[in-house]
Image (cartoon, rainbow, N blue to C red; front, side, top):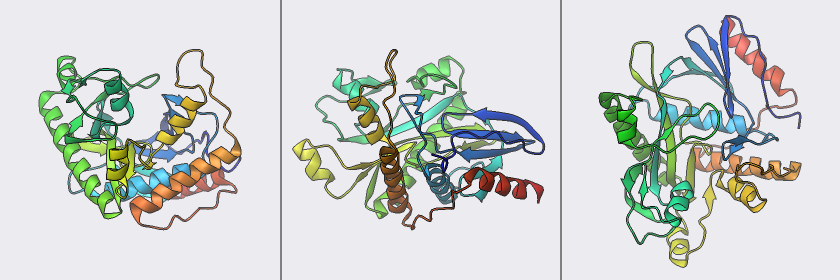
Length: 314
C-alpha cells in the first residue's frame, strides 16, 4: 500500500545519524532527535511485511498527549510535533533496560505462569491465579533493550550486578514507572478502560537528568481491557475484550507464526491490514476521548518530509 510509511530515507540538514528501530526511524540533528513513527508493525520481535494505515499517526498523537499529561511526574524528551507522525525532542542517552510494569496476569506473564513458572524477573507470582486476574500490586518486570532480536527478561538484581543502571538511578526509574502507571491507570479508567500493562523507556538528557523518552501508553507499548464486562469475563474464564496489538499476535499464532526459527510470517491481506488500522483508531478514540482525524496520506512521504524541513528551517 502506497499510503503507508514503511521506510524513510530523508537527508535532513545537519543530520549526523539515522537509527531504524522496529517501528520508528530516528534522525539525529545536532542535539535534536527527529522521530518518525512509521506504519510498520512488529510482533514477536519481527517486523511484519505490510504497513498499517494511520498507525504511525495514532502512536505519535497518543504518545504526545500522555507525555504532556505526565510531565509533572518526570521530565520527557518531547519538544514539538511538526507532523502527525513526527515527534521532535532532545537527544538523551538511553538506559539499556526497558521498564515493564504489569497490573494483571496476561500476555507474556500468563504464558510464563501457565508453563509452571512462579517467578518473573525475580518477582514472585502467587499460586492459584487465573489468566487476566489483577495482581495485588503491579509488578515490575524489566527487560534488556535489544537493538536486534529478542528483549530478554531481567531482574533488578541482575541489572545492578551487571552495572546496566546504578542503584540510585534504578530507584528513581522504579519510582517514575509506578507513578506513570498510576497516572495512566487513572486516565484510562476515566474512559472506561483498564491499563493492563505497559513499558517505559528512560534516558539521561545532556545535563544528566533522568528523562522519559520514546512513547508512552500507546497500543504498541501497552495493553488495555474494557472495564465493562471485565469481572464477568474473568469469572467465566472468557477472553477479555482488549485494545492492544495482542490480537495481531493471536492472529499470527493461529496462522503458525511465533517468531521461531523456520516459521514464515503469514500473508497479511489488505483487508486484514485495514482491520488492524481500525483497531488502532478505535483505541485512539477510546483512550484520548478525541475524534481521530485522518491526515491526507495520498503522498504521505512528501507531507512528512516537508513538515520536518519547515520545522528545522524555522
